[in-house]
Length: 470
Image (cartoon, rainbow, N blue to C red):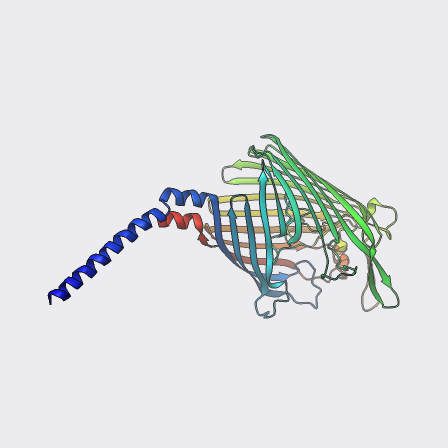
């Protein structure tokens, strides 16, 4: 009995001693709270997500409806999972994205499930660094290079971008390049994708000279393979041995930002050749002034100009301005009728004055009412013929109609937001003809949407370590 008591007592003492030694060793091996905070400051690791649902009612969105056509309603869904990591000067960002329409099971509407972004970045020192991989290319307001978050799956690009940021944050410089192939073939094959590029060069510089004046300069040159029609195959062919280049230069002036009255003025010039060999000589200009009339009320006055074929003498061999990889939404109306370089509505050039009234009744709410008017720069010369042989020509009117829109935004909480919008367009005879509809035979054009976005942070290393230390 005594032996058992001795054995039990000895075992308990041994366990207690081992526990104390382990605790001491743990105190020595475990980083202190101070060390954990230092580690958290040096390392960033964030996992976040996004689910966006958008219901759209289309009754003339992007295209007027003829009397025998019906509008539609659909719901688009975007799902994302983001991984953002950085330790010291090196880091990476990966975004898994899925975009599709409700009821569409195979994901063919956009890109389905895939890797939207995947790049790593490195700070070289003294403000210099680089990014390489798949990334968004967004500069200034996104007029020519844009991420275009309106789309279910915004465009990203595989590129290498060197950057410089001054210590005072006043100077930004980017130099980027990219090239495209459809496979890892060891033989030279045609690339053959329209509205994209074979090679791309980007140069961007922005400098804040004074608090009231900033200047930005963007230069983009895209190269494409020669495209020609083959009468034998009755299809287009691409020649990788012959490359055409097109250059676009944009100048941005930002004035009095942060003042009651501020302005943004910019213009683009575009020249070179398309892949069809057609010459490009075109331009775009924009002006927007903001006036904070009251703490809750803001007025915006703007004007946009897009050149068309009227700037050149040979219509068959020359073309007007193309927005290329710019935003697909909102610059020329939220109904997206006017898409420079992609639709016939801008071939004669375009004027667009606009007036917006933005009212913020509470910090989380905003209401934006906008009116826009459109008319062509040059006299349109488009003739259509209906099924009975009757013709109509849009040559006697520059008027393309009025668009009115109302957008409501509500920031429910930091990671949850709601947005709803409605717009209508009053088409003219000329605009109906541009949409290949006989005058007076289009339906009332209007469009609405409601969108809810949830962007939670699933894991944040710095907050996790702080909570653990506390």
